[in-house]
Length: 638
Image (cartoon, rainbow, N blue to C red; front, side):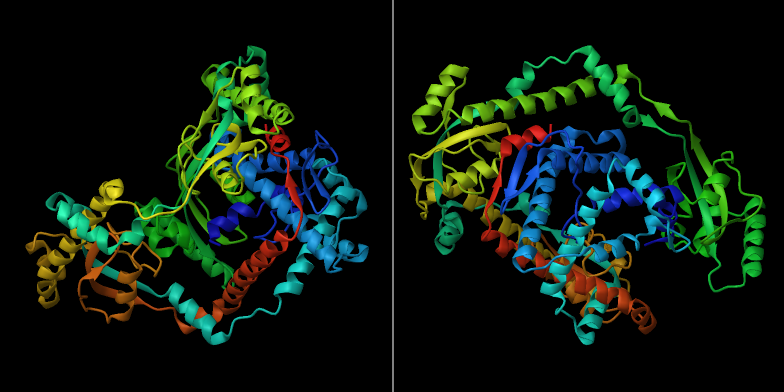
């Protein structure tokens, strides 16, 4: 974590408020904690059952609102519920809660639990409930929980479940470890860096210079028929409860819009913000007076006309901002530690602090670059946005209610037509579609497509979530996989031939100048003389993208194997051919490895344990009875 990140996180109000929220709403799996429940939930409707353990709409809604608030805190008013749902967050939250219940069911099967003393010890270890290392006492403990609208029983139940899943995970994964040699090798692989001069020949550049004859298309098809095999497909008749159609008929009263505006006024407000740059001189392990004297000297230089950004790049020990000339970008009150906050918001644009500002990180020299006054968007400005959001949410609720009602009337294929006629809807027929293809008329609908491949003819599905709303479907036809005639896939084959010929031409052009580049004393001049441009990268790790090429493991693998100053042969990638010169290498030092070994071991071991636990639970869930009421879920998320 960078110094700037740490500054933004170490706040008293964060400690005493958000810490409790985090304890109540942390996410299951990675990291391996749990989401909270709520007796104050709006509804006791059951939206899912896992081995008989219920998940109520109230529990879900509390988790959902916590996640929504977290996104709005991070992204501001741009994060609406509608956008959250488009990102699939509502489904992710549901899956997390199902995963939690499944883990608890598995722990119960294995006889794993947590006793009251373990709960007490865990609670007394949370920094949120400590003052000077001592538990704050039951009265203040309960007061903090009341601020989050939680009872001690609810919170302690959350902690118990957290402990149970931690113990389950430990019992399953604690045997996993990583040998030192393997660990060091992986550390070097991730942290060694290389700087390159790159000449690239992208295949797209040559597409206009190539074509594919019918003979070439036929020949390619004959040699790659398995690549063009048509997968198994299905065809369905379906009845759609169209959310957009319902939304088009939904009228939102002006009073509702005004109420939503007032209730969410913080969403449309931007607090006062400043943009500042700073130079940090750390004091840890150093003579405080000497560091302060150096900071005072830098202030004199900055006020005397020296370029502040240059001073920051040269002297600042905040690595994250130093490379940007000390720039911290815009931030609001409360985002920095109190001493820094107090100083910077008292300054005027262009001002540099007269004295170094002391914080827990060291001495700061601060320059205020700009200041923006607090603003609030008017109701008139956001009226349409609020209306759109409310109409979307209400249409979703109405669609879920209608789908639930129709589900009680549909049990056989003929019921689709009967219900459609009564509701003024239309039963439609899709074309043939594969498992991973959109369904004609529905768009991307993974749940509906997947269900179609599980059904037998004559069956009717329950309400399934589709991109356009809810759908009931019945299977009407199957199509077995087959190798098509060329006329059926001719355009697709031709596209592959053109791509291949363009890649081949890029290799040819790279080969034509590679020898000149290898022999040249000046790689960039030689490239320019050949009519191409050599682009220089920063020091990059193995997983970094290459300019104009993107992800190119073959290029970086070759570069890391080459000595500094050498030039490669042409290296083909999926979409280009590259010739590179290694300009510089930077290897992780023994001291870096020594200092980071324990942290890196924890990171790698935890990653492996997380993946192993996820795989274990995936198999465990296959043996469990898990039911999700999609209509109730949709209502809870609206």
